[in-house]
Length: 243
Image 1 (spheres, rainbow, N blue to C red):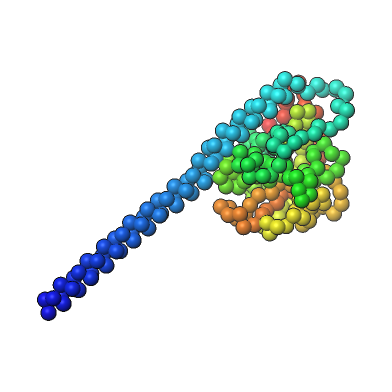
Image 2 (image 1 turned 90 degrees about the vertical axis):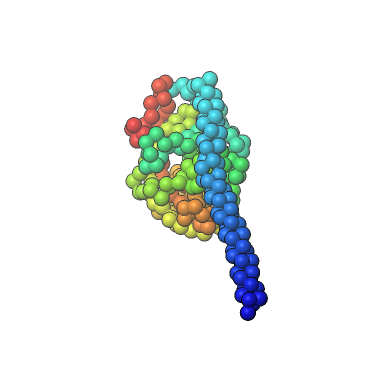
């Protein structure tokens, strides 16, 4: 009987030891996961904000070196940009006062991860704000890497969206949104975006990001149409929508 009790006690001790090791491993895994989440959502944002601030300063310095001249004749042709080039800034008052996001050509992760809004190169090549018609299409992260479109779901019909370039302010009005669609739904960035309120050609703006928050399972879109174009004055006074 004593030997049986000793054997049972030994088994319980070994079982408790195994459970203790498993518990420690689970705690360690939880800590590692928490650190990874912190890195993904916080530290990547810190790095992206620094990179975006540096690129913003560089672009504005370039503009200052060759400022817009009100009333000057138009250039021989529209500017041509390569992937990675900064073309201007996106202002969305509904995302917070003073909201400003650098716009760069391209939607590759290496570009979007720098805390910017990227211009689609395909499958529908984006029109530009100054084009006579078309859809100016942008993407940005919703979580991590600056999360420039984290609150895009708060943008509603009637809200203003402004695109700032060296020479002009392009003022848009939001007309509609698609809360959720497949990430393979490329029609949302077509020249006449699928699912939008638009039925014919125009001068449109589409903002896209992942949804639901903290996932990349689906996409959401916000659509706006151009209402006016204001030239940049010598003091670079923003339009009334941004004051």
